Image (cartoon, rainbow, N blue to C red; front, side):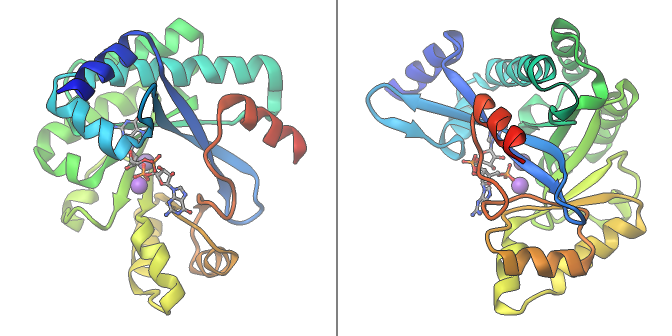
Length: 252
Ligand code: G
Ligand code: G
Ligand code: MN
Ligand code: NA
């Protein structure tokens, strides 16, 4: 397939970039983190969504190289923000990790990327989807513990969509649950049950929550009332490139 060859070239030539979406405190709007989101502008086809090219990378053996690129670029950007923004730099960058990256090599790759750019482990959070953790729960748990021991933060992405057992969740060394945006979207129809339950569950386990896909101020109000810790979505800030993040931070 032509697109796979193009993707391979784009990864090798570092033409996959990152945009960053702010994650803010529900209580006071302060910047807590940014989520790194991979962006590929194909020379002929224009922008291709990561929802398309990440699965393509997974199917074609490219996801390891893509993951290394994303990790390296996110750490490079944190170091640059530290130089240009000082104390106003985003406190943390969240990087999405594919299920296929969850192997014993990941902790070493994480350490290498952090060291290369002189970034402290606590500045990095790794987002892993609930479904990725369920493929081999025991192995996933051991790997998460190794990452946690490095001082990296861990979040479960798309929480509530992956059928993990609650008993199992209790034993996972994670810091944060990201409430899937489908549960945020249905708040508009008066359905608070799932968002409310996930937030309460997280709280009882001592975990923070990020509500994803917060697209209206009414949703933000509802999520604040439900006790969400952090908010992320178009109504707060859209994903933007590293320079735009610096401008956004400076304008606040
Ligand atoms: O940014 P956008 O909404 O288009 O992302 C679509 C999907 O692609 C989301 O599920 C997001 O988690 C995923 N995604 C974005 N960037 C990355 C990445 O760098 N690595 C992985 N594994 N997934 C990503
Ligand atoms: O699966 P993950 O949470 O990593 O996906 C992040 C994706 O969510 C990004 O591609 C981003 O563009 C998208 N996103 C961010 N904010 C919103 C929003 O308010 N509404 C919707 N529908 N998508 C959003
Ligand atoms: Mn994510
Ligand atoms: Na998500």
